[in-house]
Amino acid sequence: MNRFVKIVMWANLAVLAALAFAYPHLMISPGRLIPGHSELQTDCFACHTPVIGAQSHKCATCHKVKDIGILTTTGKPITKPASKSPVPFHQKLIEQECIQCHSDHTGVIPFRMQQTFSHALLEPTTRDQCVSCHKKPVDKAHEMASDKCTQCHNQEKWKPSTFKHDQLPLMELAKCFSCHKKPTDKIHEKASEKCGQCHRTDKWEPATFKHDLLPPMDLEQCFTCHKKPVDKIHERASEKCGQCHKTDKWKPATFRHDLLPPMDLEQCFTCHKKPVDKIHERASEKCGQCHKTDKWKPAFFKHDLLPPMELEQCFTCHKKPVDKIHERASEKCGQCHKTDKWKPAFFKHDLLPRAELRQCATCHAKDAPNDQRHRESSGRCGNCHYTDRWEPAKNAFGSSGSSGSSRSTAPSGGGFFPTPNPDWWRNNRDNND
Image (cartoon, rainbow, N blue to C red; front, side, top):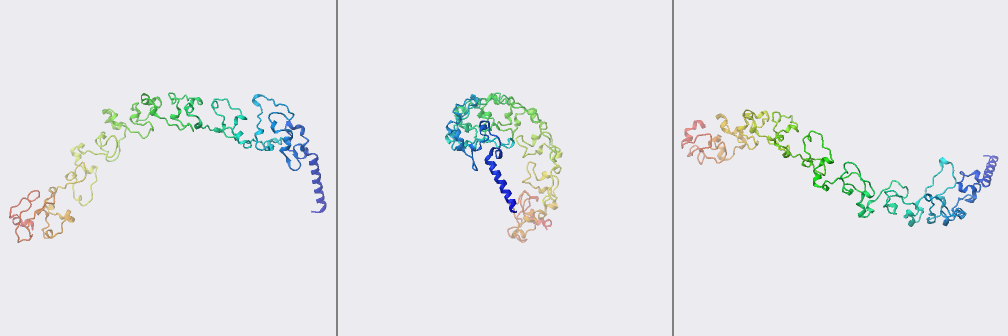
């Protein structure tokens, strides 16, 4: 940049600076002054200090702090309508910084900053005395309100407000209708004035209605407040809801079948749907033959209700076991099992053919004893043991078990072999060999 250009720039700056000091209201004014200061429109230095800006001590030259809100700058009393009476609160400010709240220039209207009064500028004692500056509202909600507005309102904005019921005396806390209007809906038609029985003070909903507060006569008249359900279950239900439901919650409900007349108690499919599984395929409509009314399971099937022809057809409902014991079993399960329970089972050996009856090891191989006496036996258990029980047993071979020793009698009674005489073994040698 050459020297000539620099000289021109500095000359322009000097001219602008001179004009700013000579005519500040034209060169640097942000806008017109407020009507009260219109006479100072051309006298910027009445409020501003060159280079520094506006200063509060210059404001106090005309506006005495002790007179603000009471007297005008000319010393005359301020008179306005009662609804707009000025409040002398400037005397209670912590710091006399006028520019924190005031800006006398209107500026460009769309971009003008709105000044907001901050209660933090007030002295602490004055800060809590809201009614010293503000007029107490005269509506119903504030009729019995105290002078401590901060109990409900904050100092930044008037709404929303939060009322603290715990600050009320107990006597007033129970008088809800002093401030609130009683609802006119069906539920509150017969409600008492003690709203705290159902509602809380911090929020109106959810509400918990206490049925135990009702007189016994009203407690049974559920349909006074509630509408009867229109579903299948409640179609024939009585108006005494307490037979199935509780007052603290609707579900779960316990239906009491014993409240039904005997005729309806047997018509289960009026309310219940018949199961479609294999077990219930041929079941009758009398569910009480197997089930109880208080719970569906466990169920007890009564086989004696079946006709004799079906009672022997066990595999119609049951599957035949595939273990070793049942491998050659017939379809007549009743020969060993009972209909009320599967175990214990009693096997009837007399139903076996004689040839199979002597082949004990076919089923009892693992049960065969391995002592000396049984190793020398013939392998035909029926010589000593009964078919209905294993013990007691009688030795048919004598004490030694050898062929040359004396022979005792075989077991008497209870087995499948006749009661022998002393020569039983000799006479039946051919059959035993």
